Every structure is written in structure tokens, then in C-alpha cells.
Amino acid sequence: MTTLLALDIGGTKVGWGIVEVGDSEHVTERGSIPTDAMRGGADVAARVCQLASSLAASHPRVTGVAVASAGVVDPAAGTIVSATGTMPGWGGTPLGTLLHESTGLSVRVLNDVHAHGLGEATLGAGRPYRSVLSIAVGTGIGGAFVEDGRVAFGARGIAGHVGHIHHHYAPDMVCSCGRKGHIESFCSGSGITAWYDSLRGESDPAVDGGRALQELADGGNVLAASCFARSAYALGEATASLVNCTDPAAVILSGSMTRSGDIWWDALREGFAASAMTPVADTPILVGSLGGDAPLLGAVSFFLHA
Image (cartoon, rainbow, N blue to C red; front, side):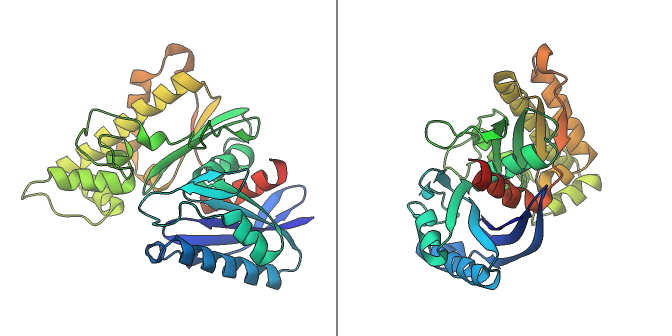
């Protein structure tokens, strides 16, 4: 039995789990601390290292640290190459080195969405399939292509940034990357809310998030329902385009937007059907099964098998 500490470093929180690896992998303990990202990358790194050191000391069976982190990651060096404004100063952080120095343990670092996709592909809904396109649709949109248990990183480590595909539905919506018209700007949880707010009239109430917008759509608000349907249709089209290019055995969708109900799912499948080439039109579209454990388990899989 191998025991690892897994960390999931995001813009809002740093999740952790103690993962036991034997015939299977399972999280036996879990917790989190706030990221407090606006305090800067150096502050975040210091508190992550303090957390890891404390957990390693209190769990002496831990033999390594498996990390899933926001930002573009150099998985060989364990360094954060770059990050968006949601985590200022995080880019350039030598995270793997810092964690090794603070814990004395072996450390492997993977991008958080890559880790999420790897977890779902190898231990979750994608387990029966050789190749999986994983798309996480929550506050933002990210993804990963996993084949034979390995993540496709690309030449610069950014393969899988599916949220930055352009779509004509919202050409003036600004994406988190600073460009306009990317699907993340109006298909993500934060994006669809911003899109609704940019279009609403005096008779349309303000909303404070995707859940409130869904309740408004389910209650019969025409604009809210239209935003859900059109954004999901666009995401379906974008997913089909990716499937046309990569030909995965299955697609896995996860994240908060997958709990948006029939309006969202019906429109997504319609958009997929409209753009998928005939040979891939029957590609299974599955819902992720690991929830918040996906990036923890994916980081562990990368630690063990990379």
C-alpha cells in the first residue's frame, strides 16, 4: 500500500487529500484552505508549502506529493509557466522544488484540468475507453485529451484549453484570457451569467450566478432560457469540432454546468449532432463520476505512472 498527499490548487481554494493506493486508489481524508489568490503567488506558495509540510508530518506514511495546479505547468520541472489574472504572480513559481524542499518528499505537478481529465479517464467514467476527451465546464472551461492513460500536453503544455475556441454567438464577450468571443466567455458558469446581464432588459431580474440563472430559466424567463440553450448549443458545436479532429472513444463532461437540467443538455446534444461528422456522431457523451476527487486522483495517477 502506497500513501500519497494530493493537492488541488485552484483560484478559490486549495484542496487536499490523503490517497491510499493499492489494488485501487481512494481518498481517505480530505480538506481545504482558502487560496487567497489576490495576496500574490509567493504568498500562496508559502501557505501551500506550509500545508503540505504539516500534513506530511501528521501522516508519516505519506511518501510523495501529487499536485494538480491552476496555470500552465511544465510537468517535467514542476514549474508554473504562466497563469491568468485569477492568480496574480503565480506564473514562474517553482512549485515542485518548493514543495520538495518543505516536505523532503518526491513531488510531481500537473495542470489541474489535465489532472481532472486524467482522473476521469483512468479511474472514473472513462475507464472502459482507450481515449477520452474530457471537458470541465464550471466557473471556466478547460479540458484534456487522454489516450492510453497519458495526457496530451502539446508543445507548450497548453493542449486542452478548449474554453478558448472562438464562436460567433458572442463576438464581443471578453474571455478570461483577454481575447473576445471564446466559448468560455459565454458558456462557462460565470460567462453565461455575464452574457445574460449584457442582454437583459428592465423586465429581466439581475442574478448573482449560474444557479440563480438556471432557476430563472426553469421558472419561464425567456432570456435566461435562451442564454442557457444558445450557450449549450455552442458548446455542443465546439465539442463536435474537437471530436471531429481528435476522434476520442468517449467524451466526458463534468463541472457545475452539467447540473443545469434538460434545457442545457438538450441544446448541447443538438449542437453536437449539428456539427459532428457522421463517423463520430455516435461518440458517447458521458457525465464525470468522480466529482471533486477527479483532480486529486488524476494527480496521483500522474505521480505513479508518468
